[in-house]
Amino acid sequence: MKRIFEIAQLPQKRIVGLMSGTSADGIDAALVEIEGSGLETQVQLLGFHFYPFPKDIREQICELFFPQSGSVDKVCQINFLLGGLFADATLEVIRKSDFPLSSIHLIASHGQTIYHLPR
Image (cartoon, rainbow, N blue to C red; front, side, top):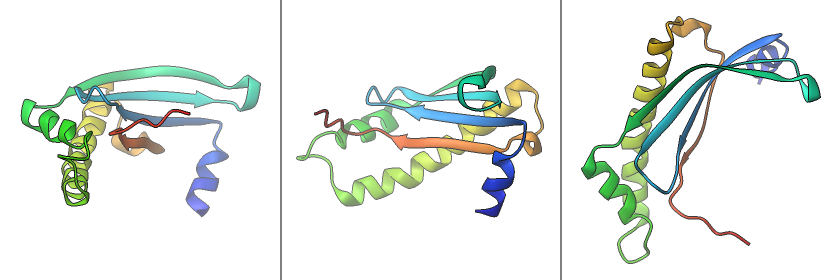
Protein backbone atom coordinates (compact mmCIF):
# COMPACT_ATOMS: atom_id res chain seq x y z
CA MET A 1 0.00 0.00 0.00
CA LYS A 2 2.89 2.34 0.69
CA ARG A 3 4.00 2.17 -2.97
CA ILE A 4 0.49 2.94 -4.23
CA PHE A 5 0.33 5.97 -1.94
CA GLU A 6 3.71 7.16 -3.25
CA ILE A 7 2.56 6.79 -6.86
CA ALA A 8 -0.67 8.68 -6.09
CA GLN A 9 1.42 11.64 -4.92
CA LEU A 10 3.36 11.91 -8.19
CA PRO A 11 2.44 14.89 -10.39
CA GLN A 12 2.43 12.65 -13.49
CA LYS A 13 1.71 8.95 -13.73
CA ARG A 14 2.27 6.60 -16.67
CA ILE A 15 -0.31 3.84 -16.68
CA VAL A 16 -1.06 0.94 -19.01
CA GLY A 17 -4.77 0.13 -19.24
CA LEU A 18 -5.91 -3.24 -20.57
CA MET A 19 -9.37 -4.28 -21.74
CA SER A 20 -10.90 -7.35 -23.32
CA GLY A 21 -14.66 -7.50 -23.61
CA THR A 22 -17.32 -9.97 -24.66
CA SER A 23 -16.34 -9.68 -28.34
CA ALA A 24 -13.30 -11.74 -27.25
CA ASP A 25 -11.43 -10.55 -30.32
CA GLY A 26 -8.33 -9.47 -28.41
CA ILE A 27 -6.80 -7.10 -25.89
CA ASP A 28 -6.80 -3.32 -26.18
CA ALA A 29 -3.74 -1.87 -24.47
CA ALA A 30 -3.36 1.87 -23.94
CA LEU A 31 -0.40 3.70 -22.42
CA VAL A 32 -1.50 7.00 -20.92
CA GLU A 33 0.02 9.78 -18.89
CA ILE A 34 -2.24 11.27 -16.24
CA GLU A 35 -1.56 14.62 -14.64
CA GLY A 36 -3.54 16.44 -11.97
CA SER A 37 -6.62 15.29 -10.12
CA GLY A 38 -10.34 15.97 -9.91
CA LEU A 39 -11.69 18.39 -12.51
CA GLU A 40 -8.11 19.40 -13.35
CA THR A 41 -7.14 15.89 -14.49
CA GLN A 42 -5.52 15.69 -17.90
CA VAL A 43 -4.96 12.44 -19.78
CA GLN A 44 -2.66 12.04 -22.76
CA LEU A 45 -2.61 8.91 -24.90
CA LEU A 46 1.03 7.93 -25.40
CA GLY A 47 0.49 4.65 -27.20
CA PHE A 48 -2.07 2.05 -28.21
CA HIS A 49 -1.80 -1.59 -29.23
CA PHE A 50 -4.44 -4.13 -30.22
CA TYR A 51 -3.36 -7.69 -29.46
CA PRO A 52 -5.66 -10.05 -31.41
CA PHE A 53 -6.52 -13.41 -29.91
CA PRO A 54 -5.72 -16.47 -32.00
CA LYS A 55 -8.87 -18.29 -33.14
CA ASP A 56 -8.46 -21.15 -30.64
CA ILE A 57 -8.11 -18.76 -27.68
CA ARG A 58 -11.19 -16.81 -28.81
CA GLU A 59 -13.15 -20.06 -29.03
CA GLN A 60 -12.06 -21.08 -25.51
CA ILE A 61 -13.17 -17.70 -24.15
CA CYS A 62 -16.52 -17.84 -25.94
CA GLU A 63 -17.22 -21.30 -24.49
CA LEU A 64 -17.20 -19.66 -21.05
CA PHE A 65 -20.17 -17.45 -21.99
CA PHE A 66 -22.62 -20.32 -21.66
CA PRO A 67 -23.40 -22.48 -18.58
CA GLN A 68 -23.55 -25.67 -20.66
CA SER A 69 -19.97 -25.24 -21.95
CA GLY A 70 -18.34 -23.06 -19.27
CA SER A 71 -17.08 -24.36 -15.95
CA VAL A 72 -15.03 -23.21 -12.98
CA ASP A 73 -12.03 -25.29 -14.04
CA LYS A 74 -12.14 -23.81 -17.56
CA VAL A 75 -12.31 -20.28 -16.09
CA CYS A 76 -9.23 -21.04 -13.98
CA GLN A 77 -7.32 -22.46 -16.94
CA ILE A 78 -8.09 -19.54 -19.24
CA ASN A 79 -7.26 -17.12 -16.42
CA PHE A 80 -3.62 -18.29 -16.44
CA LEU A 81 -3.45 -18.30 -20.23
CA LEU A 82 -4.89 -14.79 -20.48
CA GLY A 83 -2.53 -13.53 -17.78
CA GLY A 84 0.37 -14.27 -20.09
CA LEU A 85 -1.35 -12.65 -23.08
CA PHE A 86 -2.19 -9.53 -21.06
CA ALA A 87 1.49 -9.34 -20.06
CA ASP A 88 2.50 -9.66 -23.73
CA ALA A 89 0.10 -6.86 -24.72
CA THR A 90 1.46 -4.67 -21.92
CA LEU A 91 5.07 -5.15 -22.97
CA GLU A 92 4.20 -4.54 -26.63
CA VAL A 93 2.39 -1.22 -26.06
CA ILE A 94 5.32 -0.02 -23.95
CA ARG A 95 7.85 -1.16 -26.58
CA LYS A 96 5.91 0.47 -29.45
CA SER A 97 5.65 3.70 -27.47
CA ASP A 98 9.42 3.77 -26.92
CA PHE A 99 9.27 4.26 -23.16
CA PRO A 100 11.47 2.34 -20.74
CA LEU A 101 9.62 -0.32 -18.77
CA SER A 102 10.90 1.28 -15.56
CA SER A 103 8.97 4.49 -16.36
CA ILE A 104 5.57 2.76 -16.03
CA HIS A 105 3.92 3.35 -12.65
CA LEU A 106 0.81 1.16 -12.84
CA ILE A 107 -0.96 -1.45 -14.94
CA ALA A 108 -4.76 -1.54 -14.77
CA SER A 109 -6.86 -4.43 -16.05
CA HIS A 110 -10.37 -5.61 -15.27
CA GLY A 111 -9.64 -9.03 -16.75
CA GLN A 112 -11.71 -10.80 -19.38
CA THR A 113 -15.42 -10.05 -19.51
CA ILE A 114 -17.35 -13.29 -19.89
CA TYR A 115 -20.83 -12.21 -18.82
CA HIS A 116 -22.87 -9.03 -18.40
CA LEU A 117 -25.73 -8.86 -15.93
CA PRO A 118 -27.30 -5.43 -16.49
CA ARG A 119 -30.04 -4.28 -14.17
